[in-house]
Image 1: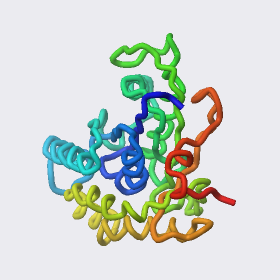
Image 2 (image 1 turned 120 degrees about the horizontal axis):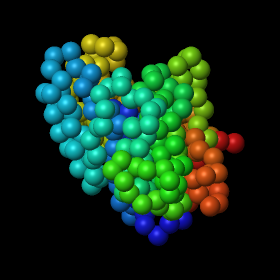
Image 3 (image 1 turned 90 degrees about the vertical axis):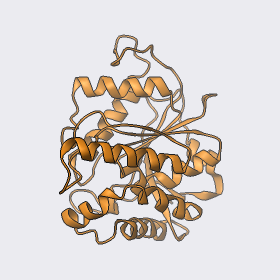
Length: 259
């Protein structure tokens, strides 16, 4: 594992990390990791009320506030929602952040999720981590390559099902019961999303929905717990010099693996 202990959580939109990854991220912070949250999209489509500039301002402020709850640094979105594409410029910009932060642990979306913004974010993050040490792959802005071990974990898709309604079973469960209130406090910072999610997706209360997702994951664990987050780890080839699972190593008894 690298000497610099940095954990980076990457979502497509502001509040995605809080829904699916924030409990684990908070626990890594308690274990001494420097924490960062980055959203590829700026959240501009998450409203039925505000214009583009106003909702982007609101959602950036909410992202910073949520990150502050766990002492994390928030990195604002690069592109508009629904415009998260696996393209050259976006990949170069995501690579820049990976090189600038040199994270050891990276949490991001599932490759199979209910919308393409999430799926494309997953692809961008994996490629950026893979390319971090390639001298002739230029980031934007340019930064020298980095060579730290980089372990990528894909959180379960929203609702724990893929886009074809198939249940996704993680290989790693993290008991976040001690962090469920922290996770809720982070998600509560995204106040603009309550009305939008109620209007667009019928989620009733986004705070209740988050708890239900985590409770379902906790019930799926080999030894059930009240609340959990689930992950599948990306293959280490091209990402680290050797196989490893730093989340399990660092969080120990709070983790369980699929039997």
